[in-house]
Image (cartoon, rainbow over all chains, first blue to last red):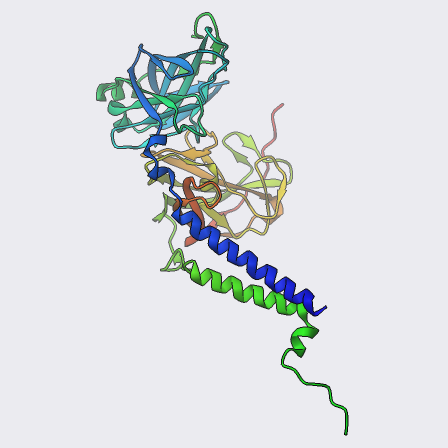
Length: 196
Length: 211
């Protein structure tokens, strides 16, 4: 059985060698940062303007804010303010949801859909308006430079189009939102008018 | 002439091939680790001892923990029969440019409780922290940049296991690419500070549930 342990040692060393070689090779391969062509294409827009995101058209309909939102009878109070965005999605050729929704401010801060933030959107069929809503809590000092990003796929935006919508808010909106009434969070609907 | 077994330095190797293989693999792994950069402490200064009420930087968070108490009720939610909450009050802030999710937040702190229960009342070998927003009682499953919350960090334990003192260990993270999918994220939680609290005891009576 002398060959048995030699075989085991050889196999172990071969595995370790391959792991080392693979690890080294990985360092040499280009990363996403080295491939600017894969960066998502930001298509700018403003509130009320339809933005073509290649597989659908999205339109931000309204932006409201408050310190408190209510969902299913439970209130959530933000140490900053809640920003509630209603938007419409019209799919182009096949049912298309919008699963990427995030806010970015002028300082490069990014609020994604973790935590208490949420995006509710139905995957609508082509030509039918899906009325969606996203809400985020942000510090008041971010309001004046907030932009909303909307895209089809949240897990991978490479080579895709991302709507980059200026929410048009100002510092004055911070005071207004801080003193606004509780917002009853809207539910997504399909076709017809958006829920109130 | 007396017969004599040929002595060989490899005799021991032949007698214990598996042990030899394991030893060689270990040596190989250590050599590989050295080649790839070796081991380094993620917290070179070691774990510091902090006092309650002081703010601690535990990348990507800053957290100040003030006091601890045992209670039967949290934000209007009574503990299951036989169980109790241990609640640590504090202030949690994020020092990052991007929202951080529940996994990193859950790894922020650990306690010296022998066992506990998860949020659904299932037994767990470790006491898992839950973070509740003090102002409204909602669960905080992540935190965005520029926001700071008054929080209740909670652990669910057996009523009989409520300790007199609680030691909380805070962990910091490192931002790097995942070895699996190469996405940037917070990894490698490592203890950065410890603080010990006297735990205010449970009230004498468990509140009655209203039906």
